[in-house]
Every structure is written in structure tokens, then in C-alpha cells.
Length: 99
Image (cartoon, rainbow, N blue to C red; front, side, top):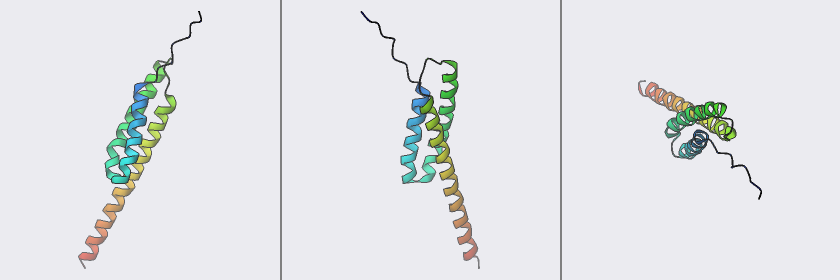
């Protein structure tokens, strides 16, 4: 009888990072500011996943962690640009209104 090695386990942090990053992308369509917490969580959990993958090379999921970090970083950039645009518009309206 042929014995096969057990399948490699996917790192849970990496999977959560990817899912949080993907969820943040969808929340970005609702409101870019809503994606800010998703971006932070995706990046932090992705970095934890990479650290735990380095400690246990028998697990898989490095690509998932990197994708989650990339999605989280993109969400932070988009949310920051949106917040900056809102602040500039409010400042411009306040300037025009004070004239």
C-alpha cells in the first residue's frame, strides 16, 4: 500500500489577511473610509502570517499573506487620499464661504 504524505497546511494568518484585504476592497466601494480598518488588519495579520511561515516552513500560504499585505496597503493609500480630498474640499468650501 502506498502512503502519501499529509497535505500541507495553509497558514491561518495568511488566509485571514487575504480575506480581510478582499473584504476591504469591497467595502471601499461603499465608502473609502470604511476600508481603513480593513487595510490595517490585513497588513498586520499578513505580517504575522509571514513571521509564522518563516518559523514553520511546513506550512503554505506565503503568497496569500503577501497578497493580503498588498491589498491592505492599497486600501490605506486609497482611504488616505479620500480623506485628504474631503479635508481639502471642506477647507475650500469654508474659504469660499468666509468671503
